[in-house]
Length: 259
Image 1 (cartoon, rainbow, N blue to C red):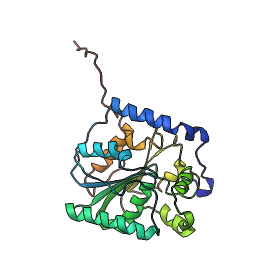
Image 2: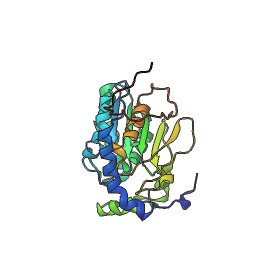
Image 3: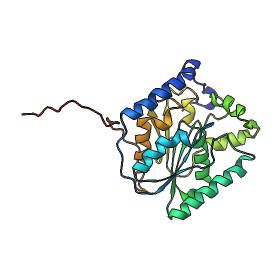
Image 4: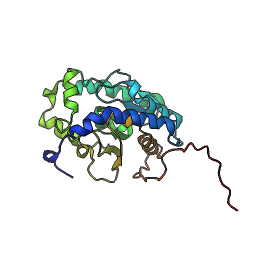
């Protein structure tokens, strides 16, 4: 795995195509929905990316609900970054995880997109007894400070980067003590995909998709992978086995019977 010094931000060519690619991916999602899997009803909290809110993860949450999971939005509106001291602010999110855990009497899976994935990882470190697994979408946990184009948006939203000390950056790069799936795209136009990669471990994996950064929460392939990961039996986590078909085809052509 490359060192943080070798990370590079995506090209400007990829960056400028992000909105159009995300729109096309959202339209494609309407043409073929991923197959529903049989969930076990355990609770799932979904965290949006920087500058995004509940609407941006609605399609992901809707699919997971259709699969039978008890799905929760993070319920803090638009993600403008941590408010105040990072660890104090995380404490508010920890209480939310503990409350959902107590309500269901079951461990909670955390799904985070981009910066939301950073939250999910840190929450799993703070209350691992409440967390079943973490799934991140385009989360550059090893390239938070640079090698991405999200820093400009973060500063525009009033984010304070002074807290990103070497000690905190090192902490953010360490994986939580629960099973982790990192979904990433080499054509990501906002963040360095190499910075999204987890270190090899028996309960950690990296799953590649061909998606834009902005389109991740609505991309049919991503929806299917997330649901597949959450549908595993608790305590029986296994690496993702890629399947050939990711969409239900909508064909109107009559089938030919074989003689």
